Image (cartoon, rainbow, N blue to C red):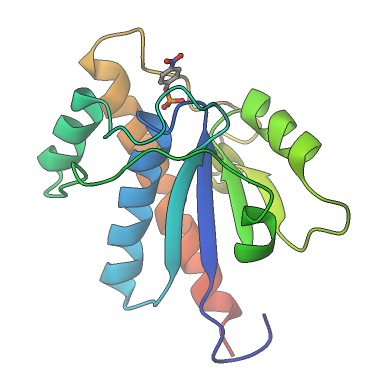
Length: 161
Ligand code: 4NP
């Protein structure tokens, strides 16, 4: 990553890849674009139930409230190749982080972390799954993932040569 031409890459991982991680992907795309930072950004789920499906309509609506159309995103399952492809793999909660740690090949270069470890004051906390709740859960998710996205961009800009 000391190569000045290297494009930083981030993968967000939740359980279904239809509620939280698509919002994290959208928030980081927005923050990187606002900062003029070229990045590779994607999201995936540890589970396979929703593979090929679009985001939950409540996530689509929440992103639209912030002017971002995520209706074309499609869910996929995280795989071993992701650990070679991404610099940072960021889990939305501790249970998905534990699953990623189990899945990671030995000597994987990807750095694993918890999303809210990138937000001062919320370290160690989960982005709670809004799937079974009301629309306010999606608003909280957006606030949390967009705070983390802004901090990630600031951190990456600070690391640029
Ligand atoms: P996500 O939410 O992990 O934020 O995408 C979920 C969506 C669906 C299910 C679980 C979590 N599900 O069990 O179907």
